[in-house]
Length: 276
Image (tube, rainbow, N blue to C red; front, side):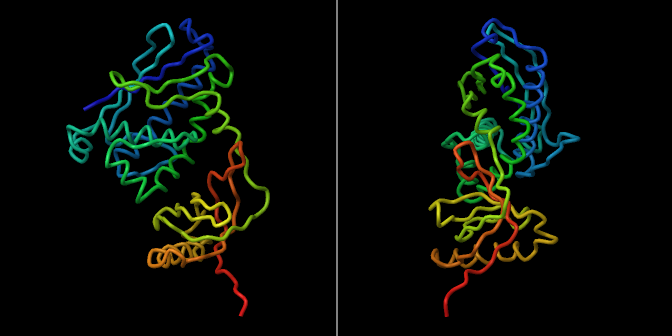
């Protein structure tokens, strides 16, 4: 079972079927890394690897340039194990929904899932896409290279016979590239709403911003074991009473170009001190 992911550069020099050799090569490498990262996670129960030495459950091939606008394509082929796990008749739809959700979340675009499979992940395990977004930052910066240099004005991630699934442009380039990290430790109050005990990725409701924000506890199994335990207990308390589980979250905020928090690297989680 296979599907084709088409990458179509439009505007600027791309409309004449030409792109700068170095810029297009860097963009192609970025897309290759991003496609493999997402495809591996889809084919292997949401396992996210920073570096893929071997492809497991799928194969990806480059099929060359087409059309005047400058189109490149990746052929993604899934093995029998993955097809059986997802279902022969629905695997391609599920893959594209997963792929589109991962890309959209990574570049700051709103996305409405079209399958129960992806909708369930967003409701129950949204930190999977948060983890993917962190790993996709570097590849997607590379993928935007032709937009950065204005060789193209947009890049369309296109599903053949269906249409555009994600469109990258200068706004998404700014979102992925103009990211800042706070120089000092900041503090926020709130409670954990979702948390993965195996990876340290989760989300907490930030009382000051009145919204849920992604976080990750670095070294949560080692030097940050107490923060890991505090996150788990906050989630457990909040699951029984939405007003419970309040904690003080300390860490470094990673913000986008509008200074909106993309995620927080947690250094400590403390109980809220109350006046006796």
